[in-house]
Image (cartoon, rainbow, N blue to C red; front, top):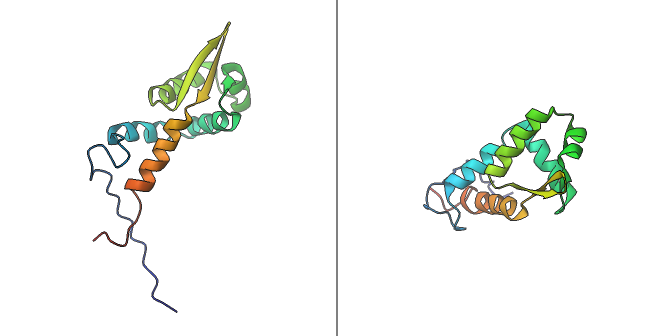
Length: 120
């Protein structure tokens, strides 16, 4: 049996001012921070599973049993982090995930924050 590499993670997210994917680390911090709440993560997961059309606020509220003010607060943070976008249809507001932003977060983490044997 060969020698197994010991996993010693080294996060080097500040190595490049704009990251390897051309994404500013401050934007990533804002997006990751927005997802660090269990309620916001649940909202984002629900929206991601709903697809590009998203869901109306009433349906999100009903699915997650959140108070209107709480839901509005969390949706605002997700929107400021550019993880979701809102659109009006008549008197209803729909929120949908920004899949490009989600993919940017995943790409950023994979490219800049993963273990590499070549790192000292």
